[in-house]
Length: 289
Image 1: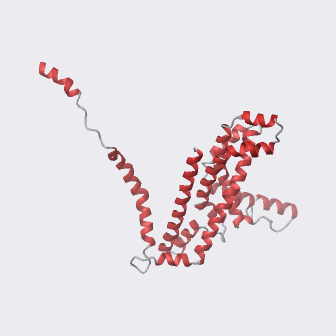
Image 2: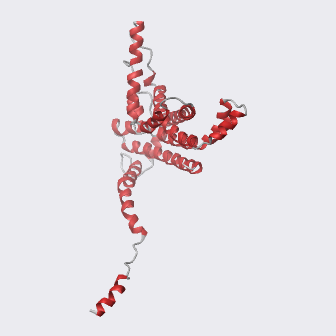
Image 3: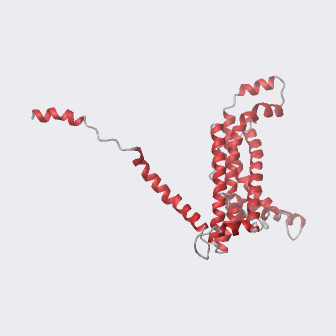
């Protein structure tokens, strides 16, 4: 009994060997590889396998030489850049109003911006269709007032309609970091500038805008990445003459059954997206986001 009693503390002091950190990392890494990396690897592999068999870069040569790919790449780039510019301007103005112009319900509007971020993109497109579609409210009101056979609003199925939908949907992604930055702005600076006779435009330009630049850069980079990969808005607007890279992937895979070509376009789109995401991370890190 005594020996058993004396040995208990010694046994209690024995610690199990520590499990290496890489062992705990194995399950999430394996899950990530199975769910994401393996399908991506299959897409890359398929992009080097033409329908004639074997392994070749012929699918890349065919896609890069096609006029459809060049037009889709250009459309994707200019739509993404124009949408990002529109979101930056509109988001900055709206965030200024919400943060610095006192009006009833400002806090509720700010909360709604957070809720808006959870909306699917096609929902915004459907709302625009109800307003500006061929049989939408605007055209219906026009025909009722003028007696015309059809209304004048037919831009929604053009690149301008896609641009309007993307700006409408992605502007809150710029407003959110801006509102966070404005909430930390020292109001004493605004009061000092106002007491020195500075008007509102000068205060915005010299006091508010410098503080907002990091948030603008971060939000703009994120919107650029999202616009580059947007599929639902282009699809639901019914813009037949607007073909972006995601739409080209859809067309080649579903409509033409050209899977190697679709995979080539998908690989190009992924590479551009990863590059822009890297830019977004750098800008966010420097902005302290």
